[in-house]
Length: 395
Ligand SMILES: *Cc1c(COP(=O)(O)O)cnc(C)c1O
Image 1: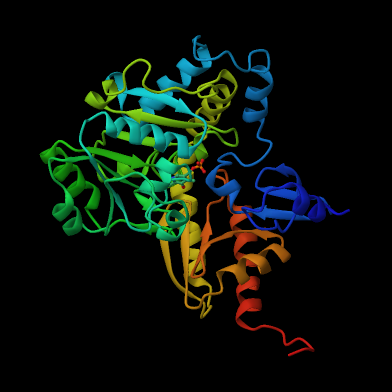
Image 2: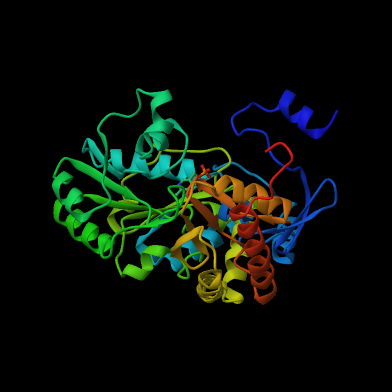
């Protein structure tokens, strides 16, 4: 039996058959069970901020091994330290509070419950958005194909166009919250229109509506700021975090700002694993390392370098480059993203395709000159191979 047979017989078929079985990672590379090396420009979908086998992560994991989990009947120092750091880097500060969860979906689930506590019925989110797979998070997700098999979902959720006009038309005193991604990653790395967040802040404040930002993919330095909203100069009522803040351990967090911090009262929300000392120690070490090595600035600089190198590739397939920092969407002229991903894998490069017209790059924040040079060389060869397919005997 090969691993593929085992997978087909043991794992529920929700993801499709994986292309490789991975056994080990080191820095920005992973290795499969045949010993082949891959440059990892996916990083577990924007999760492995420090790449693989980073000493800071290994150190935190091993030094916290003496106290993995205690339940939320007890406080632990790693949880308090991580909360302090998140409140500082988000800017939520002394008035802010943190609820720890285990995933992005659960962070958004907590945000939806927060919105419910306003007593208002309606929730606004954006068309094409992605917020997770639980019934609550799915309800606010703007992709009908994901929602429809599971309807009925939460009532009173409206998915509106990503324009200031659509928001102005939909908002009112019966709206509890507007929940948006600053850059829609799963939709293919699409930015909001210019000044959208500023306008959203003005309109939500005017109508007493919570502005909740899903920074699960954009957070933890990826876009060249600690959090993408910080570039727009606004202060939200809450942000949801996961993915890159954990560097590989499962964590989610809802961070509230100001008055939103007291909406959820004792007994109104909970979790067994959320905030346990193991994941908090690792997440705190990951964020401390990002800070110490100035990887937020590295994300901005390396993102700019990748963009200018990509712009110099002479391929009819590339139409545009979207996103910020190390969240890059490569727009394609033809629906060949899956073919590019498969060909890249053959060439020892991992990238991904959020849709058929987009290749997404979300490498570890630690990438440097060598990784960029290797990526550009390999990706150019992949584009050439896809644009000029070698005729097979059959065709
Ligand atoms: C990945 C993602 C989620 C869901 O996070 P999970 O950890 O998979 O539950 C929600 N929102 C955004 C923007 C994401 O990228």
